[in-house]
Image 1 (cartoon, each protein chain N blue to C red):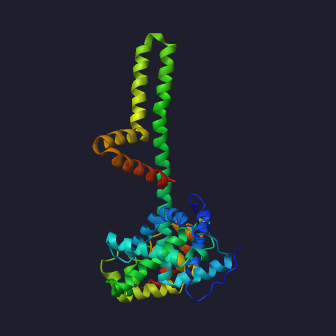
Image 2: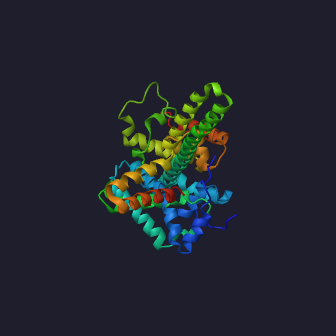
Image 3: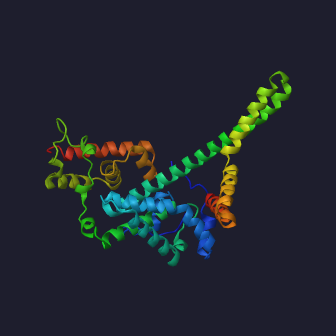
Length: 150
Length: 201
C-alpha cells in the first residue's frame, strides 16, 4: 500500500482526502482521517461536496454514453430494415413495389438522421451563401466536435 | 459501490506532468464539467448563489494553478483523479468565498446553518412535530452539538453525514467504504445514545 504519514491533528491534505474517498488508504490511515473529519466541519464539508460532485459527474457520463449508444442503434436499425425491405422486394415479387417504397422511405430516414447528411446539407447551403470560406468554417466545426468527443 | 472513471487517467496525467500541452487540453476537456460542478456545489452548500462568471473565474484559477504549479505530479492515484479534481476545485471555491464579498458570511457559518430539522425528529423525543423556530435556539443547538461530540469518532461521523448532510445509508456506505449493514448498526447505536442524552429536550 502507499506509504504516507497522516498526522492526527493537522488537516488532511487534498491528496489524502482524495485517496480516502477513492478507498486507497490503509485501515490505520483511514481511521486517522475519519477521526479528523468527524470533528472538523470544514474537512467534512470538503469530502461531502467532492463526493456529491464526482457522483453526479460519473452518473452523467454513463447517461450520455447510454444516450449516444441508443441513438446509434436507432440510426443503424433504419439501415438494417431498409436492406431487409430491399431484399424482400426480390423474394416477394407480388409486393415488389411496396417493399421498394419501404426501402426508399427507410433509406431516406437513415440518411436524414445520420450526421453525414446533415453535414452535406450544411456544406451545400454554406457554399451557396459564402463560398469556400464559409464551407471551411463548417468543416472546422465538425472537426472540433469529433475531437471533443474523443 | 464506487464507479471507476470512464477510462484510466494515468496516461493523460503522465503526459501532462511531462509538459504535453495537447494532453493537458484533453484533460481539461474531460474534467471541465466536474470542476464547474464542484465549485458551484461548494459555494451553494454555504448558501451562496454565484453568478456564472464567478464560477468561471474560479475554474480558470483552478486550471491555471494545477498547470503552473505542476500539482498533478503530487497525485498518487493517477488512474482516477476525479476526487482530487473535485477537492482542489472546492478549495479554490472556498478561497474565493473568503477573499470576496461573501467573506464575512462564510466565516460565520456554524452548525446552525447545517442541521436539517427533519433528520432530528428521530433523536429528539417529542410528542409531535418540532415547533418551528425552536431548533434555532442556541441552547438547543449547543446541546445537540455536545451530544454529537460525545459519540465515538465513527458514530459521530456517520451521524453528521446523516443528520447534517441528509445522506442515506447507501451514500454513507459509499463515502466511508463501509458495508451497508455496519453503517446501519453504527447509526442505530448512535441515535440510541443521542436519544438518551437529549431526553430532556
